[in-house]
Length: 214
Image 1 (cartoon, helix red, strand yellow):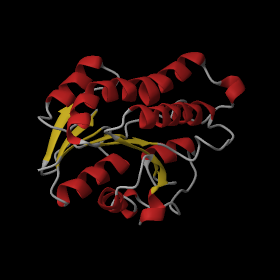
Image 2 (cartoon, rainbow, N blue to C red; image 1 turned 180 degrees about the vertical axis):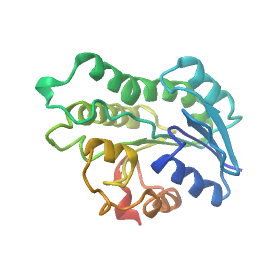
Image 3 (cartoon, rainbow, N blue to C red; image 1 turned 90 degrees about the vertical axis):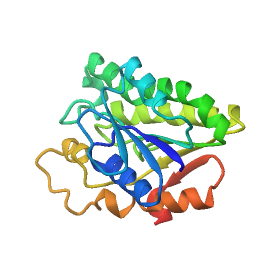
Image 4 (spheres, one colour; image 1 turned 45 degrees about the horizontal axis):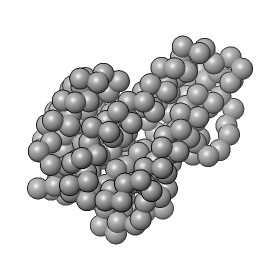
């Protein structure tokens, strides 16, 4: 049985990716701040910014075929302009969206190398594009994409994908637009199955949008 670790799997896209993989016969080890009770999922509750928690996640996997860094934080809501982003909040965003994923990657790489596995860093169109208010989150995803590109050329045995799921109807997206109606955005379960097509076709390391694989 193939094994995957997914961070941020208690709700939203992470939960749907976990369900999709389990339905396809994978064993999923799920990181989440709150409990995950999905059948076929080994839940490890904790904070991804905690080094001991990251070690526990990787230790749970005897072997590892797939790591999905999905956990993330938006930062202040409503979204402030760059000129008004509190620096402590910016540090928190980078700790969760950049430092923690890299810490987990470093721990997981030996097992991913052994399996010839896949690393997926979930990103956003706010990484390559400039949207008002998205300075903290978008720049953190830009940094994660930069790390991904370098990892792709450094790690010959591991496929590294930056995966943009598109705008989805999630709690994070609602927090970005408090009080607004976001019901026109698709639900995470509409794009999660595209992960299986990516895994089946296994394109080379690079940046991919899930809606284009649906």
